[in-house]
Image (cartoon, rainbow, N blue to C red; front, side, top):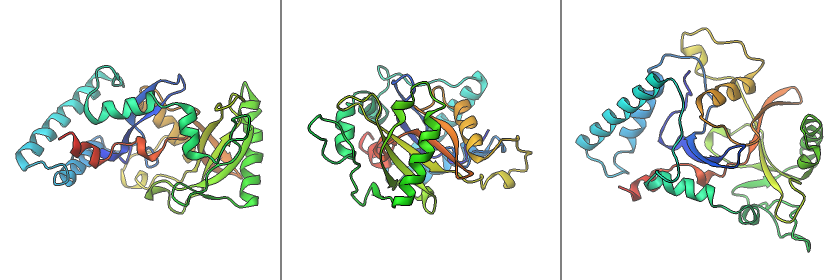
Length: 270
């Protein structure tokens, strides 16, 4: 499998369904069955493009590329996805694992939601024009009705009771696609609300170019989720392939943009 977007800034930290923090690939929108060389080639190219910002000279970059290629080949030979432990990780990866693993839900909600009511519960998302835009009344209704149907398929339907919906701003790859952040009831106690991400998924643009016959999936969202579950050691919380008004979407726990690896973080660690 080719994830299609394997470059330095498409790695990050997130919480899995077991609520533990993991560091792994986190973007599979263009995933497709393709030549095995595509992913490492894209990754090596991203390293060369980032070399100046990372203050790497050519010999150092070449050594990193060789180490990266060897590690990639070893992982393929092992035939199993593994994860990095927070206790043994170092540098920017350790910081991301700590950031996610030690983050308190109340602090996360406080950054994304308007002020809580007297009981300490949040009922509205913060519309800041940077991470969230206001959703129209019809959009809120569509998403709320979808979540009601989705909730009936889950062991605890009340957990997914919708409190608010906003349009999410996240990454250039989502431009032109419908994407929402959803505040749900969660555990029902103060600070127990959860934030979910609902994103429209399109067919992979790489699939026609790879020259490989693609497996049959029900739709683009099922393709993405199937590949993500196969390639990640542990997938992120609430990951589901769903359909909204007949179109494929992926529902998952909200992963903030700041939980992704960025070149500034890598540069800081030399």
